[in-house]
Length: 235
Length: 287
Image 1 (tube, rainbow over the protein chains, first blue to last red):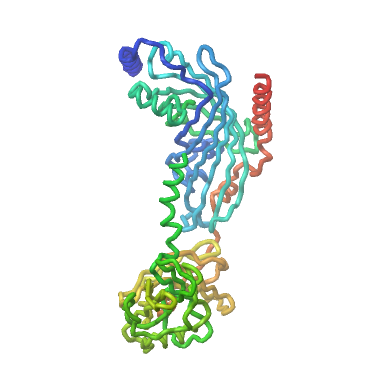
Image 2: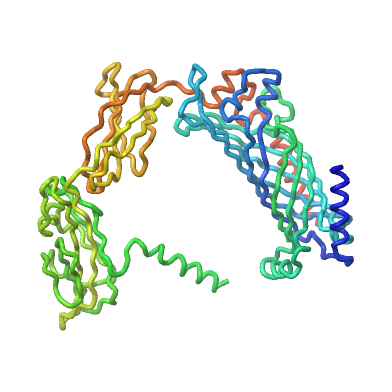
């Protein structure tokens, strides 16, 4: 049923789109702001269910997912049937919770886990969907190498441990080309700022960040599929 | 681009100039307290910015009183302090000329503790040389607090790691606001007068007193301090004992977590990232 709805939506968009070739999506590259939800696999990887005792992450920070804010830039390297971009990203996530006394009760002392995810990635975007067929929903796929810089603070905000964990990620998403809503405004933006296209992006990714299965590393992969939302500017 | 830059500068300029507004006199300290009535060591600092460009030979006359009158038509009925200052610049300062007690006495303000708190006014007149015409009058004021702020109430203490979290509330208002607070923690079990920690806090009625020893009972008292540095009495003590707290990393390791920290676990990833960066550089050179 859901597939049917998606197909119907795409068909509608195609019908609404002009039947002329669109301006090329990728020029020099792109820049993107992203927000992703995140909860690390630390507990489940080392204290897997059916463990009834909450793991250290859950007892410090709870079970809710946190937000990671990311900036991503890419440079188009291949134009052909679609565009291949090589890019990099940097993000930030701050989880704040409370430390515990020896008897397990919660203290007033704050403890934080801060994460700066760095990435190098390759992105393929199926630009012809927009450029040739005029459908403003462009699929893309991405594969990335990840290095998560992290640090933990404890009582009084002092740093107690820091480190880095590496891994990789793969995923894909849909980029909604906003130009089709108001082409005039889009052209003005291009003239004023050099931004040729603006897109809303929705992405789903699988991450594997555990120092490539190292036995002395925790698992900072996202617990489940990581969903993100962002705004992309193509130059 | 230049127009945008000019607009940004124009928007920022009032912020940049807020420290010394034309036509106003800044007084340091911004408020006086009972202790200032007898202070013979600390001086008062005055600074002002005239609204007129000083000409050769112009001078500033500085007056202090408890009256706000300050015009360009006549000299105020106030005590003139210092000499006539040669007006060498638009913004000028008077530093180190009077002690705080001399300044308060010159203003004619009463220093009786508990009396109604007066306001001390400073008037600076920018006077043309020769004609003695007053071309600009600048004024500023500072309150003289003669009463302490109310004693804080509802003091509560929660343990932290080598610290105590202390919270309190303002007492019943008596017309003098608390500008800051002082919190003292004294080791009471075991008693150790040397283990005393006093910390000052501004703007918040809760804070963390650090530098304490886990397992020691501390008696915590709080007092409020007015802008003029008048202090209230100390509250009755509340007691708390700092305790060891396990942060997230401590808990992870106590539970047997395998991560060791540092970058030792992930060189492969870093090498991979560097490899991609180098490959990119190579591609760029070829193109």
